[in-house]
Amino acid sequence: MGGARLDRVHLPTALRHAAGLAEFTSHLGSEITALVQEVHASVSPTARLGVDGVGRFVYGGIRRGFTGARRAAALGGRVAGRDPRPDAWLDVQSALNGAFGHLFEEVGSAFALPMALVRSEPERQPARRRAKRLVVFVHGLCMNERGWRRPRHARFRRWAASHLDADVAYVRYNTGLRISANGARLAALLECEAGESEILLVGHSMGGLVSRSALHQAEQAGLGWQRRVTHLACLGSPHEGASLERIGNHANRLLGATPWTRPFMRLGNLRSHGILDLRFGHMLESDWRERDLDDARPAHSEVGLPAHVEHLFVAAARFGGDAAGAVGDWLVPVESALASNLYPEGSVRRERLRDIGHIALLGDARVYELLRRWIG
Figure: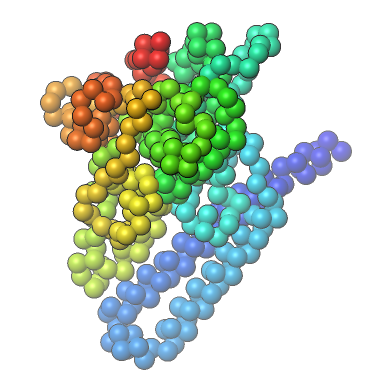
C-alpha cells in the first residue's frame, strides 16, 4: 500500500522530466536533420538544383516525425503539470533551462522553470514579528537557489536575521530567457510578494543583470517595491559583457565563411537567448530588439543607477597582477564586472577580489564580509 502511494506521488515528476527531455531531444533531432539536409545540398548538384525530390521527402518525413514526438512530449508535460517544489532533478533542469530554456518556453513546456520566490528555511528560534527587511538572492546562468547553499552564506543569513532584522529569499527562474523578460517577471513577482519590507538585492553573474533590469523596469512602471530598495550588489556580473559568449559568437560566425560550414551555424544558434544577452550585458528589450542574433558590434545597455540605491559591483580575478583584469575569473573580465566604462567613479562602490573563480564567489568568506561591512 505504502509503495503504491509513493509511486503515485512521484509519477507526475518523472513524467514531467521525461517529457522535457523528450522535447529537447526531438527539437535537437529536427535541427540535426535540417543540418544534414543543408550539408547534402551544399555538395549534391541535384539537391542544389532543387530536383532531389526523394531527399526532400526523406528529410521532410524525419522532421515531421520529430515534430510529432515533440508535440506529444509537450502534451505529456502539460498533463503532468508544474511543481514548484525542488527535487533531485532540479539541477539538471536548471542547466538545460540555461542552455535551451527559450525553446522550452516557446512550446509551453512544463520543463521550463517558472519564476518563483523561494523563502529560506526558518532558523530554529522562537517565532517573531514580520522582518523589517528582505534580502533577495538571484542566481546566475544554469543555476538555482541551491547554489547559495554554502557554510559562509548560511552564516550571513543568520547575521542578516539578527543584525538587520531581515528575512532571506531566493529567486528561481529560467535563465535561458531574455534578461529583459526575466527582469520584467521579477519586477512583477516582487510587487506581489515582497510585502512592505525594505529590500536588498544580491545577484550573482546573470542574476545581477536580472536584478538591475527588474529595478529599472519597476521604476518605469511605477511599481512600489522599487522605492523600498536600499542596496543592490552584483557579484561577478558582466555589465559590459562576458568574454566566453563573445568568443563563441565569433567562432560561430566563422562557420558562415563557406557554404560547406555554414549549415553548422544552426547548432551554434540553438544556445539560449539568455546566453546571447551575456555577450554585451543586454538588460532591456530595446538593447537587442533591432539586432541580429549574431551581431558582433558592441552595444551595452544604458540602464542607469537609481540615486536612492547603494550599488556594489564585485569583480573576481583568478590571479594577481595587471594581466588579471582582462582575464578576470575566466568568464567575466574585471573591467566588465566593475562596469568601469559605464559609470563614473563615486557612483558605485567597486571591489576586486584576487585568487578566486566565478562560481567560488558564492561561498567565499571575503564576499560575505564585504557585504556585511557595506550594508552595516
